[in-house]
Length: 188
Ligand code: SF4
Image 1: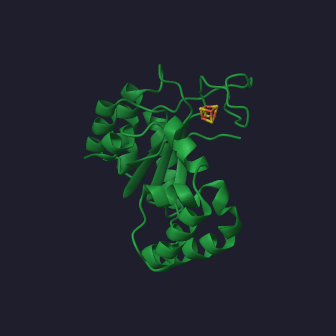
Image 2 (image 1 turned 90 degrees about the vertical axis):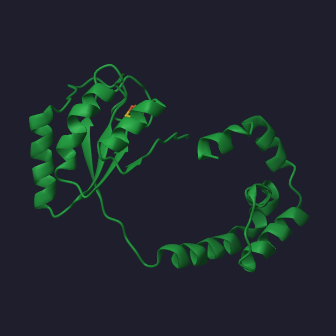
């Protein structure tokens, strides 16, 4: 079963109610499992993010630190964001790219993208995060199809943080050499 299938089994509204209903006892059980290196399930996770877990934040932070160190070690992953465009049709209040901010927008062409990549390479980076505003009409899959191979010539690891795409478009990006995609939903 894929992650998509798995997550589709849950209804957000039901999950919220379940989280709010978690008891101190369930928090204790989840914490005990975590202390003993036992596998936690979704119910345990809901207990740990419930209001009843608030008094245990410090202990959870310590446990999270322990497991992060164990899994990843003392590593720092450096990457460079490459902004293909600051053109965006959204208006997130915290973002300078929001459509209601009046300034000249740029969409890099292939040659400009190559120049950016060469500058990044000169800095010694090969881990590149392709970023753009959300302009599905002018910077959708057709545009990415043209730019990704250019960036791929300079990247040993290539990530993308652009607007949500269709499944077949993600599949195409994978074929074009993209190693990872990120979709953020930020709330403030
Ligand atoms: S969608 Fe992204 S780029 Fe566009 S305004 Fe929101 S945060 Fe900024």
